[in-house]
Length: 259
Image (tube, rainbow, N blue to C red; front, side, top):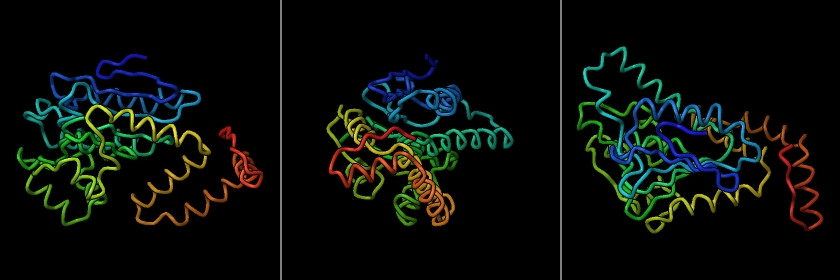
């Protein structure tokens, strides 16, 4: 499978997706959104044995340094609304994907790039990575979910500060605030993301998918208890549940089949 704006590599059933616009600091244009949407709604769901997806940026300077501002020039309110809604829909597809999706942030993650990283289930930051929502510098606000996800991750006061000042934060502060899962030496972001996905890949696939669903339900609606009850019950009907409990009792490694 090939895409105009992305490089795709299947590495031991882990899909490495690299946004490949290095000269533009991997800025998000509509082609990137179209390609990401195809990956998460059409291509990746068809891959047998897929363990998860890693998203990163080409080159050494940027994960994604923002949206492609050239596409914003002279935009009407109607087109602005469509542009924002399209970006949100693509990022929802990433957030709701039933396998782990990890952002390997290898440089600047600003504006739409920060929003993309936050749509992923986890974030691994290189030690030189920078995060920020600088849209007010352009007379804009984030349009792809930034005001919502950043506030959920780091709290209202700090989110207000970063959105209103347009300040950037480094990897260590992002980790301290809870935005980033791990900070690693530059160049080791993808390797750490793969390590985590490999570990998750040893767990029951159906249970992993349902855990993602329940956590997203809380973040979207503020209450996922009812869904947790229903999906817990569904888990008890699976072959993986029978295998997992039997393996625990028999003191052996479980062999899950995703059934």
